[in-house]
Amino acid sequence: MTHIPEDHPRYASLITRERIVEGVQMGITSQQGLVAQGRGEAFDYLIGERTIGSAAIAERVAVAYLLTAQRPIISVNGNTAALVPGALVSLSDVTGAQLEVNLFHRSDARMHRIIEHLKAHGAGKVLGSKGDARLDLSHDRGIVDQEGIYAADVVLVPLEDGDRCQKLVEMGKIVIAIDLNPLSRTSLSATVTIADNVTRALENMIQFTKEMKKDSKKQLQAIIDSYDNRRVLADAMYAIQEHLKNQAGREGIEWI
Image 1 (cartoon, one colour):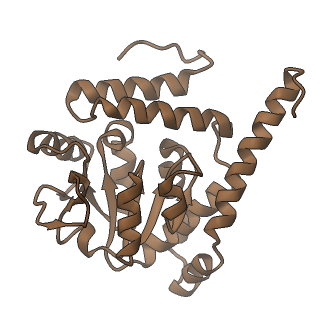
Image 2: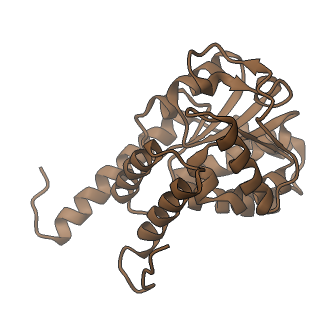
């Protein structure tokens, strides 16, 4: 990994880029994942590279769903495996949700590398290699494990493809998406949309889980019942607008 001084104004963003590049070199992340990372980074910049209030609300609701689920699953793709393997394992541990690798550019070798990478970061059993069930999709993200995503009632899908998200919702599953673009198909289709950087979102969710595990089922259900995903999406769009407006003001640029 290229040395990046910690006082660099873009330190966190550049480190994230380096992790994705390293993931490609390790055979974990696809080259197309580099493009997806750049798109997410752009939206993070627009939102101010921070966890906005509505994202924190969505993260708490996501935790409530995971803690009340019967068969929760955390879906893992190449980018998340490269960026946040330790956080994925930690969230799995504290919530009891199983990890399942699911890839658009799927191969046995890449599946094996990602599973072993997660295990190197402390994961126990990782699903995804069986591929003994299929969602009604024409590409390889439709290949899932029967005991995992196919049978799940709640699925966390960080950095997701929109059509798979839509299909999971159509199957009656609760889908939690982490997506910085509030207008993506994923964001608009998901039950809960977390408009936050995956690195911040997972750490927040781990902390929220530790705080909320003592809550009763009734308390957790009340958190779920009070949630409105459309309001959260609207707030994310407003936050982007206000951040741009404030940035323009600081630079003396008239906001039209």
